[in-house]
Each structure stands twice: as C-alpha cells, then as structure tokens.
Image 1 (cartoon, rainbow, N blue to C red):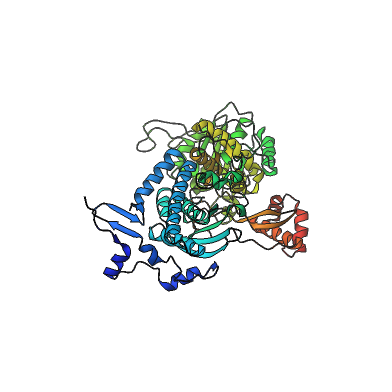
Image 2 (cartoon, rainbow, N blue to C red; image 1 turned 90 degrees about the vertical axis):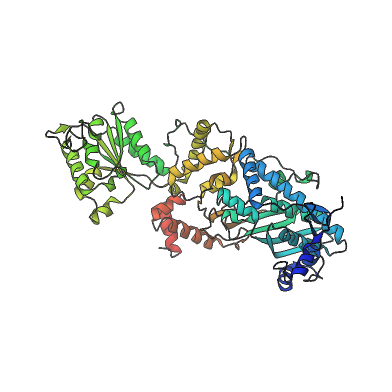
Length: 605
C-alpha cells in the first residue's frame, strides 16, 4: 500500500506564514553569545530552520519522524500519570533512575541524528542544536548562560536555565513543592546528548528547580572528571551500555551515626542538652511536693509530656492524671467541664456528672492553654485553688477536692496581666513553681537523640524498613529552625519513614515536602587542600518553598579574617536570640560573660 506524502514542519510554516516559534535571529544570537568559542553566530549550522526541516508528519500513516527516528506526540498529563504511577509503586529513587535513563536514551538518539545530519558542524554549534531540539520537542525552553569546550582535552563545562519545564508542571501538580529537583528526564537528556556528541561522559546536575520553589531551573554540566563526586549521578544514570563508568564507581552511602536513647516508645522525654537537663532537674525537685507548677514555652515543646512525667514521678503516680485543653472547650461549657453539673441545672442536663476536678481528686489536673480562660472561669478556678473545694453547676453544696494543679501556656502571662487579659491574683496562684521549656532551636543537642528515638518508634508503628538518615538529612535537621518544635520534628520523621524506600536512607526530600523553609545561614567549613575557609551559604540548605530567596549554591563567599568571622558569628547568634545574650551564649556553647565581652569589643552591644 503506498504511503502518504510526508510534510515537514518547515513546509507548513512556509505555506501558512506562521512563525515556528520565538527562535528569531536576535534571540538566538543573544543566547549563543555566552559560548566560549569561535565561529558561533545565529547562522551557525544546524540552525532552528535546519532542524525543523527534519521533522516530518504523515497523518495518513499515523507516523511522525525526526529525520529517520520515529516520534510520538503524547499528552504531558499522560506522562505525568505514568510518572506518578512509577513513583508510587516503585519509590522515588527507582522511578528517578528509570526516567533519567529514558531521557538519556532520547538525548543520545538526538545527538546521533545531529552528528549524522551535520557531520561538519562546529562542536559547539552541534551542542546548541540539542537545546533547540529539546524546545522543538515541547519539553523545555533552554536559555544558555555559559559554555566552554576544549577540543584538545575534551573538557566541557556549561550552564543553562530551563523555562516552562513540562516535568515540573506535572510533578508540582501531583506532589507540590518539595525539597529535591524533579526534571529527571531532562537531566538525562542533557547528559545523553552531550556525552554522545563529545564521545565521553558529561554529567549534568540540576542545581535549582521549580519543583523546589525556585523561579526557574538551573543546570550545570561538566565532564565527569571535573566533578568532585559522581556516584549519585551514576546511581540514577547507570549508563554502562553507552559510557564506561567503572572509573567513577563509589560505595553505597552509609547511614549517619546517631546517639540512642533508653526512653520507652512514645515518650518524648528524650534529650541531652543543658536546657533539657535543667528542666528535668527542676521537675525532680518539685515532683515530691504538692506545689502548683506552671510550664511555659512555645507550642510543641512538650509541656504536656513534662506534666505527665511530673505526675509519674510524684507520690500521686497511682492516682488519676486528667488533662484539659482549655482552648478547646467553649466558654459556655468550661465551668461544667471543670466543676461538673447537677441534674436539671439547665436544659439537657438529665443526669448529674462530675467535672474534671472531681475526676482528678487525689491525683493531678493538667490545665493546658490556661491563658485562654475567660475572666469568669478564671475567678471560679481561683476560688477552687484557694479553698480546695468546688461547687457543681446548679449545685447547692461544696465538694472538697484534693487536686494538684499543673498549668501550661505558650503566652506570656505577665504581659497578659498588664494588658488586663488575665487575673493577677490567679497568675500569682499558678506561678508558684514556673518551669520554662526552651524551643527546640535552642536545644539542638537534643535533635539527634530525638531523631533516632522517633525513627525507631515510627519504624515499629508503620512497619517501615528504612535504615537511617543520610548525612545531608542530619545536617538539614540540625540547622532547621523548627517553628513547630518537637511536634514538628515528630511529624517530619513520621512522614519520612512512610515515604522512604525499604532498605534505603531518609534524605532531605523525604522530610521537607510541605513548604517548610530551610535556612541558608549555616556556617560550614569548606576545605581546600590543607586549608579551609568559612562559608555561610551552605549548599545543603536548599529552599523548600517559593517563599524564600536564598542565594545560588554556587555563590561562594570570599574568605574572611578571624576578627570578621568572630563578629559575624556573634551578630548572627545575638540576632537569632533577639538580643538575649544568655540565649546567644547557649547557642555558641560559651558563657554569657565571655560572649558579652566579645560582643562589646566588636560594638554589638
């Protein structure tokens, strides 16, 4: 059967007068200006017109060709659906490897087409043809930043920006903004194209990605021997049938060593920092008494856990422990919840029932979010604390109760008293023995213990098979601000245990998948030979949401003098502690006196 005539895209454009795209001479010349080479211009072959001549459509046969390569037009949503199926069924690492290798094959085939069709083309002109092919195929718009190639040594380096990446659109639609790059097929394509074109392994890495919250994707490609390490790239690429990678093989990554804790499962009383030990010491001192205790601190620092432990180590441990979240009870019901109600007290009160005070009699009553109580409820609570007796709603007699009251708040009650929001007499009745629980960012020594503790707990709970954390994950967690404190750390690790592959390690992209903001102000020591320079732009602290504007990872800072380094370190610690020198001293593991002396020397206080 005779085949239908083939019509090229260029023929269609000439016949209809429709432009092929935004590949005008000026923009092409501008893009090519970054190449370190000669004889490069907008008319260097193969041009976009040359490439478009190779694309043929045969609607009658149901076939499309790119020269002699069969092509297919496929909906990006279909590719996105396939991508999701692969990630959900195989895990992210395996799916990334498959898609990267598929992209490598596509890039290698396009490179073979260019070498066959234009064998005399300048190497850099042939290289730029790959960016045009990628755009023509509807994958991504490529913007050249810089590129260089030494034909004598074969050394290649290039940097490109990717706009409108189709992979990002589908990945963000399925999983939202995450902590790792997602243009896996495109990275594989770039690696396959340039490696095949030049005849040796050139590895591309995605440094910035829209799937990580960046404005656009940025990729850097280098000859493999110019990278410090390529074992991670080889793990996903595994391109042995195209390029020999034996020289770049590395052992599999090991899990980071974390200290362990003897705390029972589910108990968040885990820590080793001086702040944690100080709170525990205060807890043991007051536990043997009947004094009222007021826990203060941000939400999520473990106030209820400390209150529960206070009860467990007190003489009342065999009696009830009753916890009440005052903020969760409507104002109209708080009195009946605390003090109980008599039958017929109001419509619907068909039976008498005891309140929390009566149920906790002989034991401990924990009142969380105490600052949310109304003035009326505060007055009745004050009377119960002073008299040791209560009266049910609708009742006519007083009931004696023996209750130890423990309260907690994340507000500053003294400030609430000054603003007229909290009764001063009740505040002094509660503030008999205050214990302040510092936020997790001020007790970073506890983070490794808590990580290991929660990892073991959730591996058991969810039957997880992950073997530990990568070093990058440990660094990210140690430098994260934890606005949600221990509760947030607990949630992050539970999420990571669920997402991590069986037998694999928990990495950054397993932890930060919900818009968390990672700081770039991490001080690390970058070694070069036998010397080192302090670097305040840590490469592992990547943005996890579009809300942050961190400097590019490649933006290295100039080495600083020792005096300037000390001043910057002190300034950061004081700023992080909001001017509290004691807190800043704890952050730097020094005494307040030493910190104050050095801060005064540098004019910081």
